[in-house]
Amino acid sequence: MPYDIVVEGLHKQYGRLHALKGVSFKVPRGSVYGLLGPNGAGKTTTIRILVGLIKPSGGKALIRGYRAGSILAKRYVGYAPERFSIAGSWRLLDFLVYIGRLYGMPRREAVEKALGLLDWVGLGSFEDERFAGLSAGMKRRLGLAQALMGDPSILVLDEPTEHLDALGRVELLGKIRSLAGEGRTVLFSTHVLAEAEQVVDRYAIIHRGRIVYEGSRGGSRSNRLARIEVDRPDALALALDAAGFNYSIQGNQFLVDTRGEEERVLRLILETGVRLLKYEAGLGITETFLRVVEGGVE
Ligand code: ATP
Image (cartoon, rainbow, N blue to C red; front, side, top):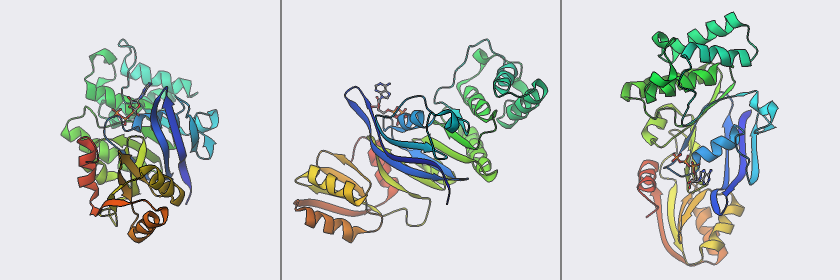
């Protein structure tokens, strides 16, 4: 299966703050991938590395095999940031045409494309409005339209449903699905799990800079997480890393994605020689995610 996005052992430090602590995931071509996590988890940081706005402190991020941020990688990517903003005096159509011209489109083609996209994102009657007059949700829609002007194979959308009303959210999720239906790859972030579950093919839950869970929608998704407490967390972390298990850690509490291999995880604990203080298995994703959002593993 070809992967459009490959992230391996990604680290990012902002001064002393370790925002990403070894994030790894792969996005299959033509799929919808959700990056889920509470505020401050590291979603935006991951996305900004993928689109080349910031550099990782370590690890790999590849777009179609090219280093994220390189010109070759950027060719493939359309990006809608968390807070899309331009000078307030821009009229919507003029702005999109300008973007199209930057992509080298002849003026007529750019106008046609811009009008089509404004219509598609639900801003059809606002072509002559100025950016300053838009609501937050409308700005979001324009952000999506500009991301599509270059006809990208890969779309990276940071919290695309934020500020949209209930109907707008449903519509947007439908659009994300239809983009994948056209063969595009879509990576988007959100902190609303229920929302993501409707449209993603695969998703990762990111918490405190680590992937806690990575998998596909449905199937064996639930009951794979285990909460584990040991006396020497550092030793267990090393063993889990070596065995390739995803986990998040807080104090001496681990949340481990057992991938259904609970026996292996338990054997790992025994072999590492740490003392097991607590083992709670079969945690559902939704429940776990909500706890995480509500402020920590415990
Ligand atoms: P949100 O939904 O709130 O945007 P997020 O999951 O996207 O959350 P990030 O924005 O990636 O999270 O932030 C991860 C961590 O890195 C947070 O602790 C944040 O405060 C910190 N951080 C992000 N950008 C910077 C920066 N430029 N300088 C210093 N710290 C930063």
